[in-house]
Image (cartoon, rainbow over all chains, first blue to last red; front, side, top):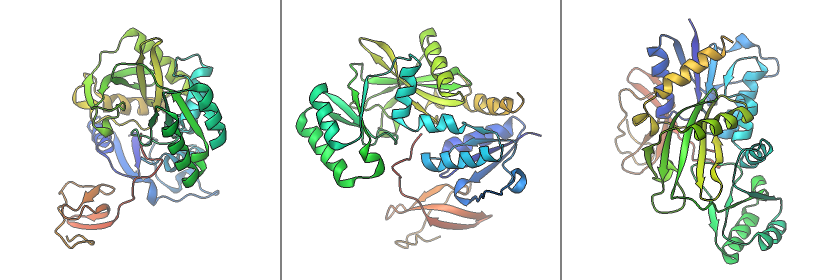
Length: 285
Length: 55
């Protein structure tokens, strides 16, 4: 019998839902806390039991990414693959990949020091948005409406001076309705979508209180998400779209360990079933 | 079970699993269930939200 392993580092309701679904579908399932695992360069596939296929669901991007590399070293099938996780967890890599594949995405500027960022902002002008290249849930995404604000943010970055503080990711402020669209794709197919409506500010993250509302998947969304999924390497993804008033739909971000507890309540599709079926089918190919 | 921080009674659901987070309703401290064997539960301090946390 196929055994599905769900790897976590903080158990969210999504991981419990996936485990329950796997059991209901007649598969064996096991939960593994990534924080309790060990590997070494002589590790063999059978040293640990990670089942037949792993769903990597760590909340920490770096932990999940490095854990995935260990699994792939041992030839253990894992969703999502290392290359997919690596790109999705980093906004700069994602923006470059989208643009390289002619996928519409907001214009984004990169610089690698505070001074170069000040020079860049003098040329670009305002308003723009500064985002950390790694991070989620809208944390530290700040609209820069004028030079005083940008100077405060840049100065703060100079003080904290962490490795990622030196990577400046500045994006055009997209003129759009106060909402975005979260689409879940499984194996390049858009299976469910929701509008995430802002609760007042310009951010639309559910984690910050945005209101979810079911969204019908149009052909345009389906095509755009399929193209995006294929470009990044497939798997199970959460693709964030924005409705740019000039450009139409643009891909803003791709999420690698997509949360779905909000969408599951209103979606017509059985999201966890689609995910488990995809995992099982991925090892049959 | 008592909260290690403030000694209040912690409410741990019967179906809570290893890896889940329990919050103390009195002081707000977060604990992760590190072991569970029937009604015996072991807790450890939960990790704080990291810069790289998310989806």
